[in-house]
Each structure stands twice: as structure tokens, then as C-alpha cells.
Length: 153
Image (cartoon, rainbow, N blue to C red; front, side, top):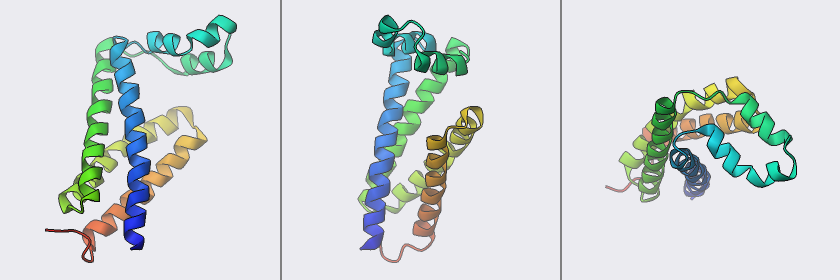
């Protein structure tokens, strides 16, 4: 029973994070993969009130625009990996072993991206999210190697 509650908590957390990632990737693709155009759109009201808005300047000052094609590829990968994450989480909730294995693999694929983000910006919430991701990966490893009747055939 306790294992099911933990799986539900993990699932809700990861689905919300994946939906935010899909939204971010979609915004980038919508604005032709230009981070500057997307950030100008998102902060338009704040910039009208204060042209030297601190949050906007902070974000754009730390973001170096890569080539448009690279940004489009990364935005597409963000969407695809996030949708795969949601798909495998749903399969895990239906107690399928392949869902747990797929969720484990996708979670491991996110780790280098999270480490890159933490090393680039060193943001405390992202560091906590990385620690939570390691805990989730460890829990999934234990679930896959010692299922104790959790999965259905």
C-alpha cells in the first residue's frame, strides 16, 4: 500500500514537470525557436511598466541564443522526452513493468540536462529537483529489481 502511494506522488510530480516542459518547448517552437522573441512575449507587460525589468534582464543576460536550428532541435527533444515521460508514467500507474523500465530510462536521460542546467545557473530549486530525480531513479531501480507483486502480467 505504501509503495502505491509513493508511486502516485512521484507520478503527479513528474507529470506536472513534464507538462511544463511540453509547454516550454511548444512556446519555443511557436516563436520560431527564438528565446529572445519568446521572452519578449512573456514579459511584454512588465517591460511596458518598467523597461529595465530585473527578472527579464536576469533571464536574458544568462541565456545565450544558440543557432535557431539547434534551439528547434532541443525544443523538439524537450517535447518528445516529456511526452515519453508521461506515457511511461501512465503505464506505470497501470502497473506495467515496461512502463517502469521506460520511465527509468527517460529519467536517466533527463539527468545530464538537469546537471547542465544546475552547473550553468546554480539555482537552488533546480538543485533540489535534481536530488529528487536521483531519489526517483533509485526508487524505480528498486521497484524494477524487487517488484514484490506490484506488476500485473
